[in-house]
Structures are given as C-alpha cells and as structure tokens.
Length: 117
Image 1 (cartoon, one colour):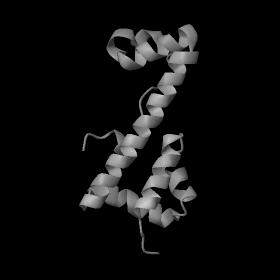
Image 2 (spheres, one colour):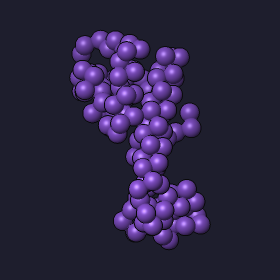
Image 3 (cartoon, helix red, strand yellow):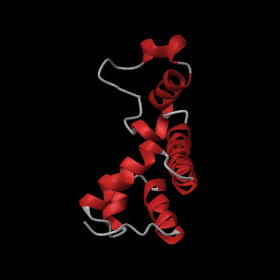
C-alpha cells in the first residue's frame, strides 16, 4: 500500500468537496486517494492517534456542518410549508416529529462526523 501523505492542501480540498455535499469517500477519491488510503485515513480518524488527525476530524465535522447549514438555509428560503415542517421536525424532533413522513430519516449517517470526540 502506498504511504499516505495528507497535506493541508488535501484537507482543504477534501473539506471543500464535503462542504458542497460529497460523501467522505467521494471527496477522498476526487482528491486522488486510493481505496486503501481511504481505509487507512478512516482508521487513523477513528483512533485519533495524533494531533493532526484530531484537527483533521474537526475540519471534516466543520465542513459537513457548513454543508448542512447551507442546505437548511435553502429549505428555509425556498421550502414553503413542507420545508418549514421539515425544519421544525429536525430542530425539535421530540416536539414536532409527527410532522415528518414515516420514511424520512433525518439522522446523519456520517458516524465519525457526528461523534462528540
């Protein structure tokens, strides 16, 4: 397997792709990482083995949060009544959960990006 050289430029590019909605894997592939390198990066992010990966995880979480906020702003501006219902249900799930269709899953599937580490 090729040695991973994650530079600040790669982190910036990766976060840019995530900020516009790409998944981590898609963003990493677009940055030129191989599948093996992606797995290695994910392992390092899980273990938080050094300060670089702690900061990297923080940057990824921030980019994903920025994407989410931009999308919420679009729903708020353009969503009409259905968008307002969705926003209320997402923000106050206990209070407004019944407004969501049963098939709507608002949970984030990013795992690592939603952990409180």
